[in-house]
Length: 242
View (spheres, helix red, strand yellow):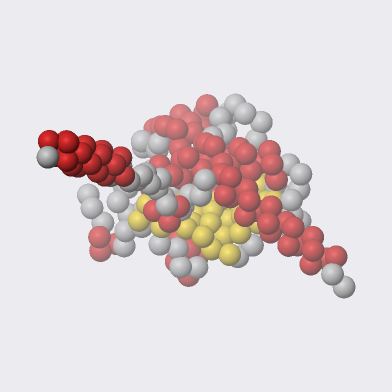
């Protein structure tokens, strides 16, 4: 009987050991800590909800200021156009400007395959949002829009004095810059740009349109590059097929 009892105890201990090996410790399940691209955005507040890069010295591509107030860079005849609606206080917009834009220029803009258009969608919750957009438009009239855009993402628009200092730093005509900032047409351009964005269904920044196809939130650069490369291949196939 003692031998039987001993065998029974050994079997019980073995079962316990085997079951313990098959059990996962608490919280063993992997958790996805990555933020989906659709959440890498900043919500645009409606008026009723209103509460209270490329380095400056780096070689920048030639820019054009379109009548819509959009800054256009790259070959105007490029087969692909990436339009981005952005804002200077938005962290994901800053990430796009400081990291993604540089890579896009190197990978696609310089080869003439892509043009990038930068438009501004002021956020009501930031008091200086409209003024920052105005400052870039006024700088763009002197071919310094992209340069000032980069400064504002790094240092932010703090007031008329800081804007004038930035203009001086970029060796702009500060008199013309100041007059542009006070011009009612500059405000009207920013307003029209926002209305245009709203007509396209823009609710978040950054929002992108690749040849008209809309996607919201900052993608990881590998995903953005893959999306552009796919569009390039599709265009090449389209022209090869009779």
